[in-house]
Length: 145
Image 1 (spheres, one colour):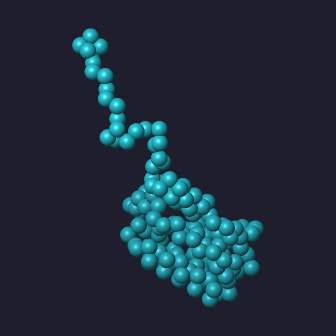
Image 2: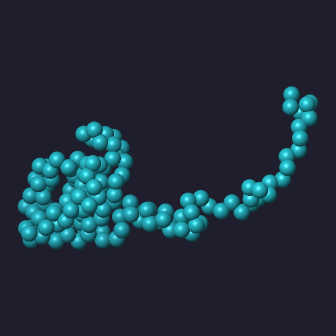
Image 3: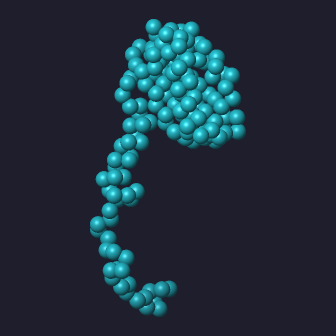
């Protein structure tokens, strides 16, 4: 059997649960045809680089597939009939990468960095607290001109 990576972009109007259900339907279709899905990653609702069918965002999913070519062909046929799918792309690969994709790895790294600082912004230890600011020197009339 051949190895494939498959990315699907679904309409922004559907819910994340519907996008996950679409992934499960593709998994059932592939497994019904004798294939195997090694990994499914739901990347969430992301901005599109350009508008596709009047949509500015889309639900992205990545699937790592080990299946015969007719099973992948049938999956692509079904996706082309589905109105919720904006785009899909299937690429044949030499081996499946079962680690986290760069998209999810970056998201986890950013989440860890935010947790380390205790919020979205880092601590600004070199600055005094709001109520503790030193008073400004009053300007004279000559300095203001």
